[in-house]
Length: 353
Ligand SMILES: Cc1cc2nc3c(=O)[nH]c(=O)nc-3n(C[C@H](O)[C@H](O)[C@H](O)COP(=O)(O)O)c2cc1C
Image 1: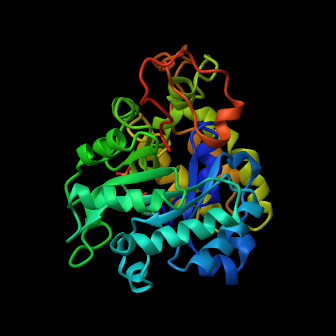
Image 2: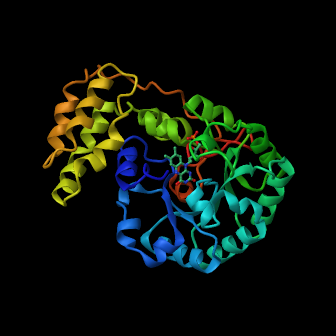
């Protein structure tokens, strides 16, 4: 998510979940090819597994950008066909590309030739004027014929005329049935559902019908919702979940390092404001962190002080539901996971992508 999932945000989320696949903000292929690559692409090894999302509509530039992303160590290259912003549209990429499946297929083919890591696509269920299920299926089939095996589908159309990007994430109704049907009719493809998923229970329910669930706004607003993911969906060892206080404390060495390198504290702390969302002391935490992290010279002590405003609960034993039978991971995680239990359903898969 632009202006959200930068490297500091992802490092923070990694203190909460080790297995969830995280994505970069969208970066245009031209920026990667011609811009300051280190600033745009560098990340901490701890952020794996990590996808780089590219925007663009020009096969050669996307192929080159994908190659560069692979060299930086990204585990997946994702092509954005879902962004409705006017700026992106003016560049004739993002959601507008749903009108030109052949061009998307050309872009994907060039990217797949250029890299060894998976090339995936994030799209909408449609755009205004092409909102029928048949249009979605035909788009996906065309792009899959170029070799894309995994599609994350935001279950709303994008209205390219008349709605702002924010409205385009709220106004068009969610149509999960279209995404379910896509998986049912094209079972060989990995289909990840996105849009309006607010809890791990909701993600779990989707996993009966699709291979994964991608969570955006809810996870940013309340990142601690991801605490149970590793155990519940990836079969990670049982044990106490990291407390929110543990998560904040685990950030301190990183904050000290980055601040010493000249990164302003607020660039990191702004992603941590929601850590205690809905908890006693959550507002005081947000106010303290938000209010003082902009001050010149602010550092890790601001986080330590803000933590004293939040009551620390007694440690509780495992409080997440047991590992979801049949759960599995994709891509990079697959090799590092213990063998999954016998699958009861063919359609259960990686969550919280
Ligand atoms: C601030 C913001 C920035 C976003 N930037 C991107 C982006 O760079 N690439 C992308 O594919 N989607 C982007 N999105 C859309 C989300 O990835 C997601 O598709 C959408 O918010 C619906 O999912 P959600 O209900 O779980 O948030 C952005 C959303 C928000 C709120």
